[in-house]
Amino acid sequence: MSTLDRKLRIFLCHASQDNPIVRELYQKLVTEGWIDPWLDEEKLLPGMDWDMEIEKAVEAADAVIVCLSKNSISKEGYVQKELRFVLDIADEKPEETIFVIPLRVDDCLRPRRLKKWQYVDYFPEERRTWALNRVLESFSFRARSIGINGENTKTEAKNEINKMMSLFQDEDNQILVFAQITLRDGDVKKSMRQYTILIEKGVFLDLIITELQYATKNYPKEIITWQTLGNAYKRAHREEDAVDAYDTAQEIADLSTGTPRRS
Image (tube, rainbow, N blue to C red; front, side, top):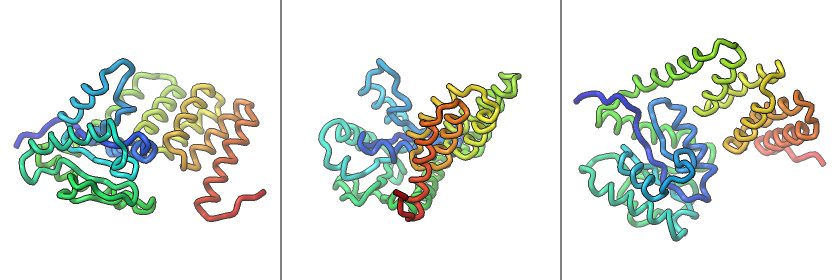
């Protein structure tokens, strides 16, 4: 079998109400380097034909994660239409092909149409790492079955960073690009370390604040993201905003340890 020089294409089928947890899953898949996940809010551009682009994405996908929740199984409308199309494509695949992976994000009932496929539970939160590893095992099997070399694509992801860095001679611009790419790829801690270097220098503060505000929406439970945003606000002399960001970081820390909030 010849080796395909591309990433494994994964479509994420989900209800819009589950966007936060699905967005987190998307970021983790991107971080792998050898997976190209398709999420509507990341891939669809203004003016695109929604139906056509999603159908094209499903047809091109090597596998589909069907995110199941009480929202998705009870909701009428587009998510059911999307699921029907996924199942139609699955029917065209050879037997024993890993294509549909049901992933429960809460304690919902599995639809009858999906019961023939082994599922994985992506809850509670402490189980997510284990569940993701199980999904990645299935993806590795699928990649090998169609001749995709995961190690090659991981190397390509690293080369992309090096290529982007080489475009800028200025050290601060290189740090900014590295921070943006690592954040895009889901490596939050590494990204925040780079942003912190720039914040301490007092450069790109308006841009950094905007990017960190976006990061807190994608990673609302990451303490370090809120702390870094607070540092950026403080460096920009936005004291009230800094206090709010620091308070949010403390609230998350208290919740994670079960510490009662101070009045």
